[in-house]
Image (tube, rainbow, N blue to C red; front, side):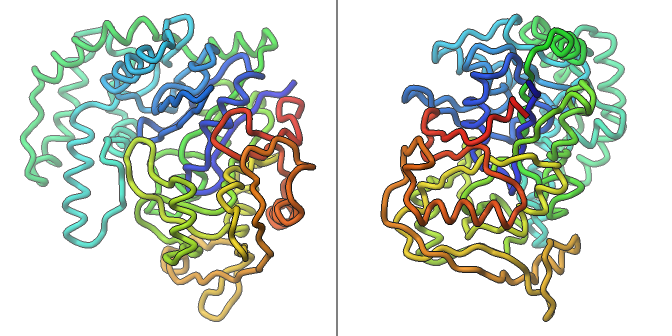
Length: 431
């Protein structure tokens, strides 16, 4: 049996929550390895909807779940999310949930800085389109070696020292943005108040995972966002502040690269993105409206409308390469029901030249015009179909053409938000 890493292969919002939840039935441990509570996963289980942001999807299944060191943790949001999920009948105990002791914290000063920067950038027409939840500033403090980490919550003396270090960096930034200086006493009091609610869950996550691996447990790595929001490989600077690709599963959990196993890329049957940035296949016509309406394309946590467009095979083929994807889970096929003609982007025209990849230059990305291939659509419903042989012929042709163009097989096919409406074509845990 192989471990499985689940990553978004587009710009996020591909339906990772449902797929991870479905795979959790076959896993023994589930671990989040990057991002923060800017990522939202919706699970629909027996008609009940669970909306998660920081908690790994495994908690709903009662599977041991880990928030890895690659995640930035807002402890106040975390405690609130635990309370919300427990109110839905899911008990979150230290036996179920582990928080890496070396994960870095999102503090109240981080969203304040995030929002102020976006406001200032908006006046210059240079918004990135962040969620305003402090993810970027928290990662900046991490790489700047001044972050407060989860383990620091156990020591008032350590907190005092680190708050002073933060002040020396943040107060000049805050002054330039018209924000008041950090109040060290208030911040310390907030941290000391939340600490007892977080510390019972804190352990060396790498050690928990190492023990699980040695015991032959099956580990499911749960990614957030998508490959083209990766801070290195995405449409920079319109990206998130962490590495979202599969390679981060090792670094963000502490298990080591050989432990990652099978890489499953989640791919929507069309393309969406949230926020600013280039999007060659974007549709602003009736088809785009159809995708947005039928697909319910609104951010889980932010409520922001998602931009919609045709399937971009160039983008996903590149994602297959940079993630080392072994197979994909193709989601929301049913949203295409009723469309007479479908289009797939097979190249970009930039300055008279045809590209079979997305260049790194922001100017080239903005200038890219999609080169489309047309396929015949279908009127039959694919919703809730649970066997590949029961799909109509044109839907089968569409799936097979996607496989050819991206260079990876479809391992799972999702035909509705419900957990059981998933067609297993290849079992990722069997490698």
